[in-house]
Image (cartoon, rainbow, N blue to C red):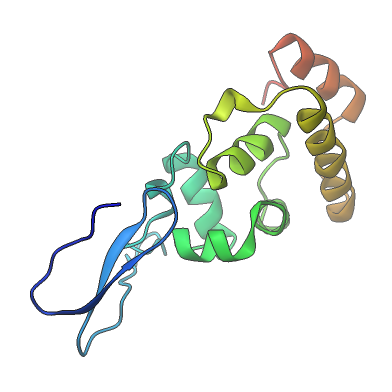
Length: 149
């Protein structure tokens, strides 16, 4: 993995796929953008398949950086997102899992997808009061349309 080059850096630090930053002497490693709460030097969007809309949901849930997201893991991060008002959607959930594994978003299939569906339903159940009919959403996901929001 290529290292960031900075002559004033104490030591290069690398994260998972897509994350490279340096720690500069005498400074905090991360800088947050005040309007969004997103860490400007380690954004969650540095992780493949995480775009601006999901990054905004993560910031609202208190997940400001790719490092924080990796430390939490997909299940805890998705639970935090639901608790902060994100509407549940199975595809968004499994895309998050694939993203943290550095895999294409549509790589989830078969038994793995079924296991993630069971975990998604359990996480959704922990939050309670979230919108969505699980049986309907399952059928719509099977035919590739998902819920219309």
